[in-house]
Image 1: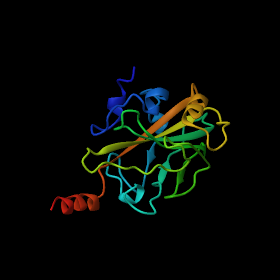
Image 2 (image 1 turned 180 degrees about the horizontal axis):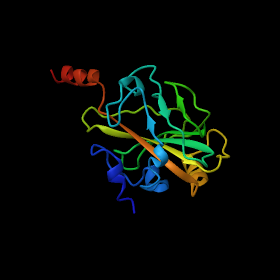
Image 3 (image 1 turned 120 degrees about the vertical axis):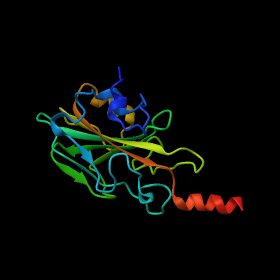
Length: 192
């Protein structure tokens, strides 16, 4: 059912069936009518800068930019998940994005945010064990054919229920993170 997922994601990113795109998108919906998601802070599949992760104090969410969604879109939803975790940990739920060409600046508060998998409505800072493999973070933007009628702070289950059957297009951007070099140096110092 989601065999196309491997073709959409870079080889370094697991085709985790818990990703929102596996539930809401089809191969045909990805990039429909040239709908794209990008970031001026990183290229597709590139490493996240530590300033967007738990490895830096005062870290913030990365900037996002997108093209206009297909005709008929009423609202857009952004879901960010860690495809490398078994349950595809949710790092950010954002909705209320106007269905037009747009962007979120670095650290900008989105119109509406829901509870991530730690129960708060902020950007859940990526954290990777220094001994572990790099993690793949999947930024998934969905164009919906109706507005989402949820108050800020709603959970993933509520947002997903509101999205069901209303996704007309989607776009995916991925980034990896393997921890900061400072952590690696600290580990070397500890080994001495």
